[in-house]
Image (tube, rainbow, N blue to C red; front, side):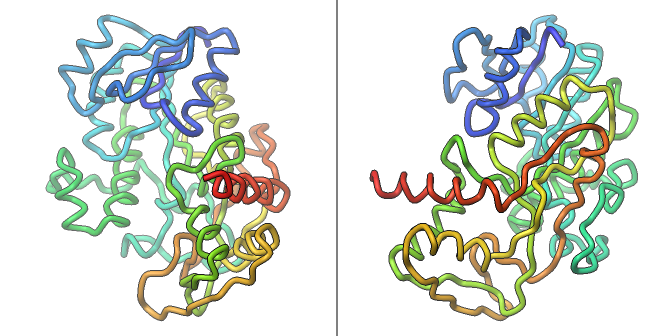
Length: 316
């Protein structure tokens, strides 16, 4: 892999991925809207990935061995990418999400059996319906129509669906577990939510029946995307550390680091804190491991992520 294009890649694990690619000797081109400067030795092209004409002009005849798409959120994004990068690359890797399996965001998804992690076949992108009646070029309108969580999950499912159907390049969808920061702070603030509330003695909203989920970290998912870019397999790949964890287990780790006891507030039917789930859809990472990627264990790295988040809060 000599020439690589990363769409997005200017923060969090995307930035680490760009650095891994550069340090491997690849020529790396980052395409984004210019919100941040890329690392030294990396070419940046400024374009909105949803603007087909602008993206085509920015690429100016360039070709790549592989494209890694960090910010493909809708079938509109995917359709633009398929047209623009057709003939420009042999391989296309899209970063997707565990949320595609969430039965709460689609009546079409059969709820998983608790304790039986979902496999890639549970949601087949090649047969998933792509709804052209929704205004995907205006994500805000779709969020108003479907709800924020459902529009995000359905956008990812349908984006996979577009790219899995008759694309002019080999396609991989990496469905990432919930990403927490070990080497870098989590810009979503989800882990910080627990650190701040438990440290301050404020209640944490949890479901009465709490189900575990799957996690990964910024280092692991960047390593996996780097590996997937240089491999030759295709299709969907679940990416998560070994070992499921529910919100109580997460709070126990925060409590151990902060010396405070969590105060739980049980909610029935209403919104809870970020990693409290009242349904099960943790992922099976067996396909990636059979292909040769070795995952860490959540219980081994999560205390480090918690300690880093506590440390950043203390420095503020």
